[in-house]
Image (cartoon, rainbow, N blue to C red):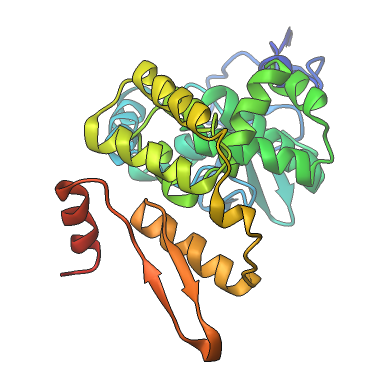
Length: 302
């Protein structure tokens, strides 16, 4: 019987897993193989049908073409990198490796190699998030959401989070700031319509209406990150003048403010609700060009 030490899975994940676990490797025998007994710490072959999806999985979308490609590879060569699971009753719950599990199912594989760990729910969440952040090609919003979950649900400070994922605090902060942007801009980042550089530039202005204006300029004119930064600087300079409406301290209820913000996100431009006595009022949707007007009319199904 030969003992080999399993190598670490990365700085962040190693802090949670015991890298000193020993994997037992036995020489193959000539007789018919005996069904392997799954035990914590060893690489075991478990039935795919016994593996439950990780409820803490931060990734919601998987590239189907990439999954199919991996599936074909598994058919030819088998799954080289084991998934990681924990024992839950008679079945197993996935900790990391959902992409590999999905591809194995596509390949029609009945059994899959797995590391079996002992972990509570918080450790499960941490390991799943760290594994995805370090190993998967998440978009910036998915990374930001994963960071926020680690802070909220794992009770981590930004410095501790940075240590877990091997990133400095400023990088963590930049990702988390993305979640402060209006939903329409977050969706654009998620869908790769604008880059992380564009988003950082847009964050240079605090006002939601100005952020939406800059975003619309980026999309409609195809502005580079540098041009976007220049636009933000111009807005910052002009913003030193006092906004008359804000100077008057016009009151607007939370309910109406929410409606105004939602409309601004929908139309990606500044929207104003003008309230009058007895519940009357108007909605003002400005546009900056004929093309911008056409875009707004399309959203209104005009």
